Image 1 (spheres, rainbow, N blue to C red):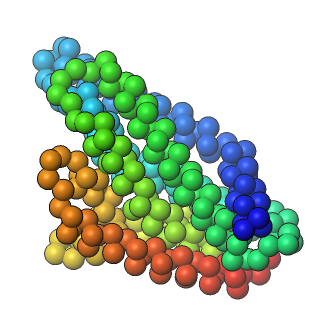
Image 2: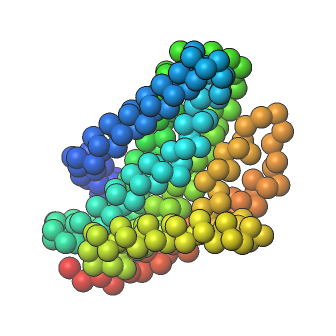
Length: 247
């Protein structure tokens, strides 16, 4: 356990030193600020009340869940694998007294921490900005539930990117293939709506199930099993590639 903790803290430290963290924070602030400006302008100058105060946080989530949040997740996961292998910095990690499984697990946990922190950061920003927007409100518990539930599909996306990063040999190829697979999954869900629920990308908006007075427990349970299946399969496949990869 001490080895896993040390490896995990090391991965967090490396993530914190990457410039992409600063870029992600700046883009998140800019995106939320622009959304707030648009909503406020429509209300004050056009008389159109698009959303209420707490609903603004859900509006932000609905947009970023398909754009910036997956993009930031992909960048961080590719950096943790493809970039380290290209720059040969992975040697320093693998020469430490820790197994490859624990190294891979520590990277997964670090990615999970980044995703959760990113979601909480966006939620706090959107809630702070929403104070300036009047109207009907969702309960704070609904907003928190929506953001926390978004963690699971983004985590599956992270595991998919990690698998691709260990399948390819470069950062550009890993990113392009990740984007292609993401778009293909979205396209398949669009052209085959009957099978959409079996693609993990369809769960990027499942936070809707956690808001409101009625909670569809049966659908949440079914989607949870699908996400769990994707997670187990992608984690196992990604680790198998990482374990066989030569430095």
